[in-house]
Amino acid sequence: MVLPKAIYAGTYFPIFGHFLTETTPNLAAVADYARSNPDIPILMHLGPDMSGDGLKAPSLKPWAAWFHEKVGIEFNRLRFITAPMRIRELHVPPSPLRRKHRYLDRATVALDRLFSAPAGSDELIYFSRSRWPKPRLAGEAEIERRLADRGYAIVHPQELTLDEQLSVIRGARSLVGAQGTALHWSLYSTKLQQVVSLGWPSGLQKGICLVRGQSYLELRGRRPKDTGLRVREVSVDRLETYLDQAAVEIFS
Image (cartoon, rainbow, N blue to C red):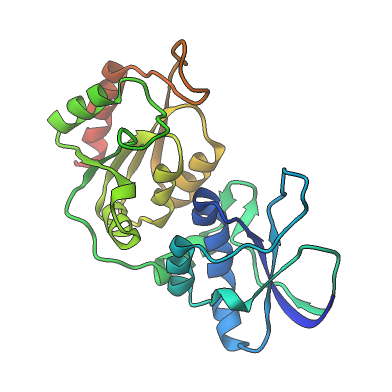
């Protein structure tokens, strides 16, 4: 396949977490240039297919359509690299990342412009997975109870629309939750001051908090016997101690 011209926009991941943290910043980075050059297709790589069946162009998922609308790039404008191809003239706008998990300031500038939303009313948020079929924390009901007593709103992201999830994160000042996709919404917040990740380390979450100037704590846990590979048990007492110390900085 030969294209006379194309705009390169990084990798397209059809998985929500990677789409939120990688694909969307990539699309946001090329949005202005793409708008000024509406006749040039947008070229994207695909994540490796571990099944061995080869790369196949993805279909547009309903949740992905929301992101495409926000960045102003239609899905049918994308061209996916599924086999060797030639591009006579490739336009490469500046990347939103300087290396893996390390965002440049231009990434947040673009996201803030494209993903504005009314701020939610709750400043203390706990993103829960207790109603999700794949748990990440043992004893999450106790974590919810203790944090609710401290004034944290217990939020189940999968029960909200994407607009509602965006509003929640843009109103929060403190975010606590199991390590994973829900915490990565902090990349889209201008107000959030701290993120407390429960379970295990995450270079990606560290990078998000670094570019946003958010304090970041990893409260690591242990894997209980006879539980899923990614399930962890953490100390709620240690969590509360940290929140007591951090509250002085956040709300002073």
